[in-house]
Length: 167
Image 1: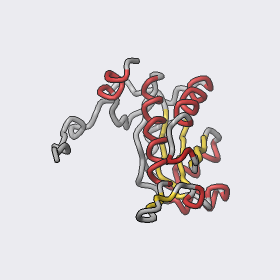
Image 2: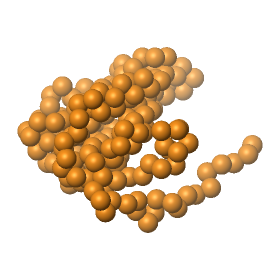
Image 3: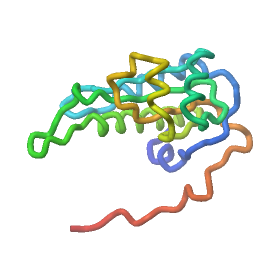
């Protein structure tokens, strides 16, 4: 899909079907996400793919925002693996994870699937179930699936604030 159409067409989809997601599409999404730039190319980001019934159960225990998805991706950042800006000691782990997550979200839409960025979850529930997440700041969960026939953007989707200022 042409980039401009992709970013303008994408919306937070909160109604997904239970149709299986093909492995080729999961691989494509991961390839797109892992090509994201990170500060000084340190790549302090991890993506966990949850497809098993047990993993999906744990996701559902951490958030009610699962939207019927059959696959989930969790994005996390490891602060001690990230670049730190010398001028003010700003750690770029969360910035890097957000860039990766944004590319992941756009790739989901590009391959005909839908999702939304879920930030309302309990990271401690996930870390208790998946100890490999313990050293990471968990940034987002992406429920992934095909859009339900009646899926549509929320009423707030097209509301935009003026965020541009000339200096």
